[in-house]
Image 1 (cartoon, one colour):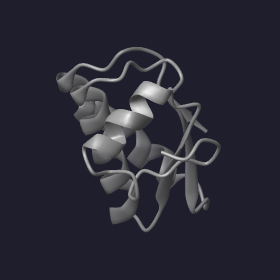
Image 2 (tube, one colour):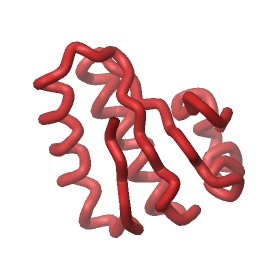
Image 3 (tube, helix red, strand yellow):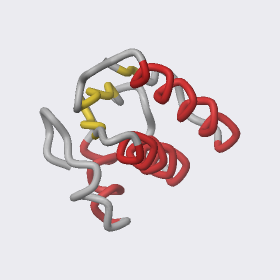
Length: 92
């Protein structure tokens, strides 16, 4: 489980990706569940989630979003990222 517990600034994205890379290096899991309940629905959040997904895909893995707010789901859908960022508990 990978939880993001606070709003994300654009400058935080590289370190989030590094943290995910480290987590995946020590795991055999094919899917990382990412708890996003604390995140607001904005473009920086969606960019960060897309970059996290890209990081996972490059390592042969996937990220699934858990507890995404309806607003975040709508923004992801609006930005055309529904399929790459589908959720484990709430379809995005």
